Length: 370
Image (cartoon, rainbow, N blue to C red; front, side, top):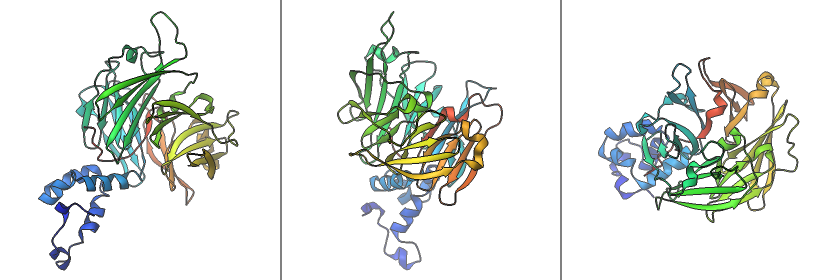
């Protein structure tokens, strides 16, 4: 049912207008920027973006269209970076985080929100929605270890979870604690920010896990838990946000790690997924039964058409219909039904870092960070 405030007169259909539900379905498929532009059309549409039912409808449709978000820094201006959004439906668009009024880098992405850390000041974090240009400066944690993570004072793992139904989000900072004058041991500090209480909580455990840069970037939020793939693809490291406990999930038995095979952790239609890339094949696995931890191979893709790119290609996001992959200077999309490869975006030679280094899965929503 639609909110009563959006019930249009019955004369609409008699005058040739579309019914309310059809109009809302059309509007719910607009880009966020267009959604805010149409607010000037009439009072009804002005209030639309703040209506709870419509926001939920919009977000439900938007999350089915994952994109790739790139943070591109030009060598001529190392202090400036732009965000490039690559959308399978709408192509490429560019925007910035200048509304935050700080130099930041993107650390995590989830359901339309970004978690960013301040570059000039360690320990300062923001949550923002780049489409609505809203942001929130997270309160400082009273715990000193937030700036004493090993090895460079920054958290090894930064995770962001956004529940579209409850409109609640969490930020997770985790890593090995370094006491002054001592090497880090197995003491693993985890700080969790809760948007409802606007407070941080802390718990400590003993761990022996390590992560590559890509493992740290590719954090997956499903089933009220955050998931990271460990170094050498030994397992999936899981933080259950309902009880603040770490656990491990084993990968498919048939998965072959090492020997030129690379493994990446992604989401696929609300399920945990791993993609294995070898010299000639890309195998896609999905955990269809989360409780039983049952993995199934759902696709096997030949890489013959892009053989020269295979050593430097990284999967970023996917759906049942397509897979986005990043190389040093390109974003490619593989259409799974037609089995066609297409270049979606390429960068010139002035970029400092490879595109895969700062690529995140992204969804455009009207999730509020306030």
